[in-house]
Image 1 (cartoon, one colour):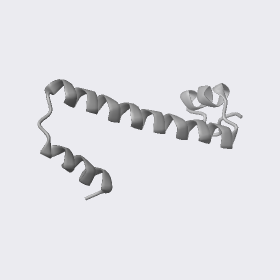
Image 2: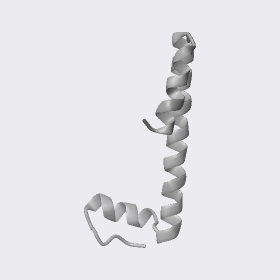
Image 3: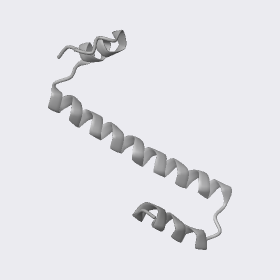
Image 4: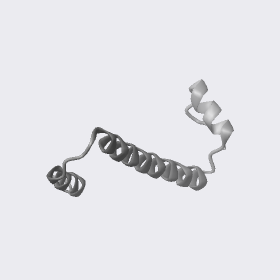
Length: 66
């Protein structure tokens, strides 16, 4: 098991309400969303990507533009 799975298993000792479960799910979702967004920001900065790059990807232009 991963360290995350082990930590979540520890939560099983507590009886949580449905509301608490939804709140925990929301917290985890926001955490991973923010982490992915931060990583994408770093990639954009590293590669000099721009809105034009995104438009090129949408058009299927594999070369893209900076």
